[in-house]
Length: 125
Image (cartoon, rainbow, N blue to C red):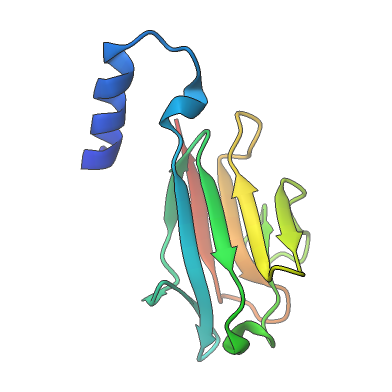
């Protein structure tokens, strides 16, 4: 599925010689809140996230509603096995994921205490 954003990235990439894939990387910031055993990212209930290699996701966990819902990136839905490629910075109350060529194509954001709170993170080619 092509979005307008991914089409523009592709058109730009084809116009230039690739010096670095990171030249086209984006950073996406999400304010995470929790309500009714669901996560909300920037106000949207459990959205699926689609990213590309080079993109960075920053999950802001500073909202008090998240305190009872430990937020982690995992390789399986509702798993307690934290994906080692995501950086959990507890002093900043954030989780950061930079997508590399080695990042699994399917990840999930999950609560380690409650099932079905999160959704998928899909890495696009």
